[in-house]
Length: 192
Image (cartoon, rainbow, N blue to C red; front, side, top):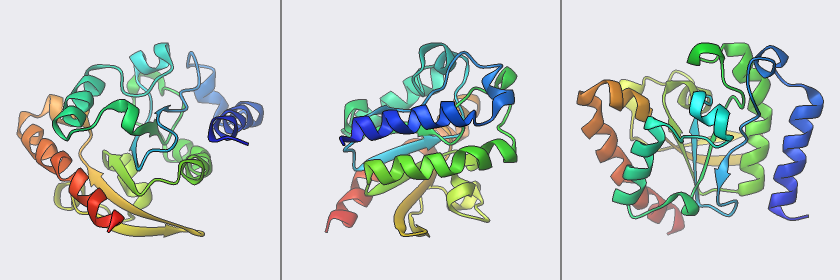
């Protein structure tokens, strides 16, 4: 079975299991992820927003445009990486995902990572970061990679600020760009 087939089977399983039905009924569609299933880097946000829900692709709004700019600055493009969220349905009114919603989707996110087998997981924002790194303080931990183990999987996780936060807070913008530009170096260290 190819990675594409495994990802499609996982998508069908989420739909068949009716994960987070309260969210599903308010969303247009399930937003699994987008990008290269053989990627060395997976970016994980918190949940789809309005544009993502409409298009079925993560990070396509203003935060996505900023993410694309940072990828280009770091010598990457969307086709090089895989982008997803912990929660696969848009929360109403773009509210933060609830703890039980993140818990419901967490096993499926781990299965996505099992399929892709990335070398580096980059979390975008505190919601996804805190799931990989308990007691995460994004203000002090951003940009600092650490190894995290779940079951049989070990990940090198780099928590970053969410691109949307940098759009609303200009002071975070440069910090996020600087952290982002170090990602290729982190990847090189893993490959060594």
